[in-house]
Every structure is written in structure tokens, then in C-alpha cells.
Image (cartoon, rainbow, N blue to C red):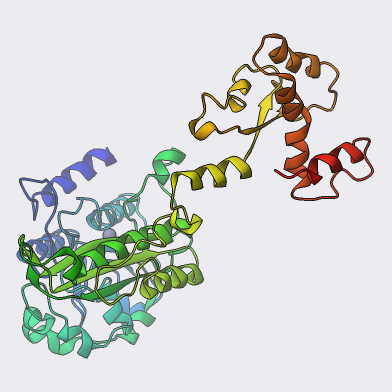
Length: 437
Ligand SMILES: [Zn+2]
């Protein structure tokens, strides 16, 4: 019943602003599509005998009860979309609110507090670049003057887009003071609810987040005549910065996205003169976010050699290991790494097989566990099992000694020279550690 009713109300809204090709939505703030959504809202609200109320900042309110009574309970969301956004992002919260009012009425509820439904303007910031613009203006976290001067990608200022309405922009503390509670029902845009198998979740906090504009300047030139070493190509610096942002975010369990870029002159056969990119970054803690953004700002991973070509040092994990030759891999890997193995696994023999391994490597395999055991306190049964590798001709006696003793002694003793002090093998272990490798 409720599902059907939702579906029918939903259907009346879904054609507005939908791109027939992609199925995505283009409902930029104050565009024809978004204005049509607002008209839809006004009609639905009037059908329900709600009072329509447009505030000074383009946010649209519908009231059940007199908002002047104060302590209002408000719910709602937004109509505007990101470019080719999903149908539910925003409108779900508004359609659900209208249906919630219907249900309350059918159940004979007489609210003791005014109930409001709100559609906030330019929530996504897709048109004028500032997210939550309508609610920021309402709460005074952005000045009317700054808002009026915001410009969309067609060069239209907010002042021009709003016409005379732009004159009234600004904080509305009185309106805010009348609100007692605000709840927004919003589509989840990740997969957390799916993985939890839950239909709905309650947000407990909003991650600190922000957007940063990044400008890169180089030197425009011809792609065919400028030698690779003579270039000052800001696209390269930009590309490295995107990679660095991704890496820094991953290292910090944060999010970093560069989803928007402008290149000048944006020609296939031209080295660019300028690149502007926009970074969106988010993290659970403000300090984490700050350090990720700071790392990107410092140009971590960028060799600031002034030629705008960037560098790979911090992006290339190998570079910090100072690997310059094939042999460096051998020296870094073979000497430093130890491998715990099962007693009688024939695969152990590969570690000792210099002929088969690249660069004649002999790996530091040592006996450490057996099936179903993390460690083996009683060696009496597993040592003979391990010795089967010798009996089967897979290891020689030297290999076996290294497997069962020498490599284990090095593994522990090179980190802590006193590891074997006071044990029955103290003397033998000391001899192993005294031998050069
Ligand atoms: Zn949204």
C-alpha cells in the first residue's frame, strides 16, 4: 500500500530533468528542470493544504501548522543534482516527507508542534561550486555578498541567475530559531547498508571534508616541435598530484578525489599552459584531513624542479629502497626476509635450490609450524617428519641444518642478540651469529 503510493508519487517527479541518453539527472539549481521540481513541490504541498513559504535564500518550505509557534520539526532534502546524478539523491527525502505527512494525517495525528518540509537550494554545489549554498546562506556561514558573486560554468553569476531575488539573500536567525529538530532522509551512496543487510541507518557524524582548487602553470607549446626535455607541461604535474592525492588518502584511510579539471588551451596537439583541478577530500578526523591536504599541497611526490614536469620519487615505492639494478632486488629481499615453513612440505626445497631460483638466490626458509599449529612446542615428532625431505633427496644435510636451526637463530638473533641467552643452545646460537653472512 505505502509502497504503491510511494511509486505513484515518485513517478510524477522522475521525468523532470532526466537525460534520455544516460538516464542520469541534470537538475542544476535554478535551471528549468530544478524550477519544474519546485513547481511540482508547490502543487503537492497545496494539494495537502500545506502553507508554502519561500525564504530569503531560495529554500522552499511547506508547513503543516504555524511555523511561528516555534520548536518546529522539519524534514526534507534537495532537488538539485550533480551532473547526471541519481534519481534518489535529494528527492527521496522530499517525496518521503510528503508521504509521511499523509500517513500521519490518516492515522489522525494532530501534531503539537509545526511540521515543515524543506527543499534546500543548490545543495550539491554543482552549478555555483559551493555545496549546501541555500542552507549556508540561511545559517550565515557564507555571506550574501560572496554568494552573489559566485559564477557558474557559463559565466552567469548567482546575482544574475536570481535577478531581484538576489537582493534578499542573507542569514535568517529568526527562522532558524523557530526550528526545533531537523531530520533528512537521504539515499545512502555507498554499499554499507547493503553489506549490513539493513534498510536504513542513522548517521552519527559527518566526516570533516572540503574542496580545494589546485592551479598548475606551465608553458604552452607545440606537441610536435618542442623536445621532451624542453617542456614545462603542467598536465604532468597535475597527473602526479592526482596520483599523490590518491596515495596519501589510502595511506591515511581517508578519501581524495579529483573529478574535475580544466586544461588550457585543451588541444590535442598543444602542451598546456595552465591546468586547474579540484580536489575533494574527506577523513574521519580533521587532523587526518589536514595532513592529507597538506601533503598534496606540499607537492609530496613532486620534484619541484621548476620545469613543471613533476617527479616520481614519493609515488614510486621502489625509489625509497634505492633500487638501481637487478642485483639490488636480490640484496634487499634475499638477506632481509625469512619464511616460516611446514615440517615436511616438499615446496620448502625450492628455497634452497640455487639452480632454480632467479639470481641463484637461496631464501631463508625455516621450520616454524605444522598443520593446524601456530607453533610447535613439542619437536619430537615433527623433526623426523622434516628430515623426510633429506631422505627423499630434496634437501642435503647443510640445507636441513639451516632450515631447522641456523635460519631461525638468525631471524631472532639478528633483531635481539640476547634472544638465546640462558637457553640450552646459547653457545651454538652465538656461533651462528658470529659468522659473517
Ligand atoms: Zn543529496
